[in-house]
Image (tube, rainbow, N blue to C red; front, top):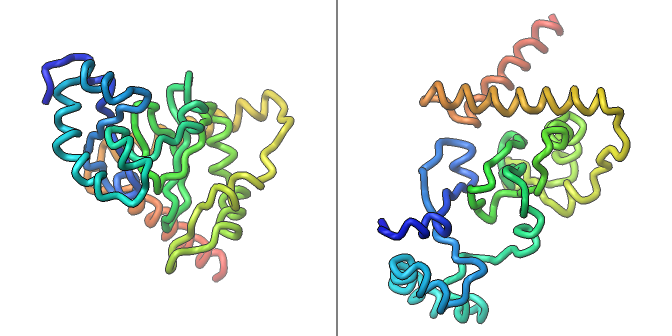
Length: 218
């Protein structure tokens, strides 16, 4: 821990696929993006010392020159994503490889792992479109699989998807409201039931759908 209140500006919550699919480990990450080594040292001395002692020795062995030379910078800079997220308070994320294709909002203060596919979209309308059956089926067909788990590939699933260009305001509001409710309901259920995971929630939903289909077939 640091006694410097300003260090809160460079220490963030971190989430990877397992955190979202199961339960968050409440892991933190140091992100000194935008600071030179001298600025990091002068503005955040305790944080800088931690990175110097624990990160630099590993980076010194890295084959990538950018990692070795910019050892205090967290992972990939992902500058384009950072620019896109400037000014928004949340973004849409999905796990790259997962049994269930789920899209959800994450607060802007959470630093995503590189295995999360993130979109700089804060309007729930877009969350609704991405959560729609049309987009999910598209993603299942276009994204391929890893073993038996579907993959969501940005260039194959997101970029070529025909997102609606013109939508009447009343329909857009309807989709937006339903998406907000869906995102809030999932988070509420997970917060109230510590024994349930996001994967478990969708496993149960899938089992209910299968049971209903079997009843219909009889």
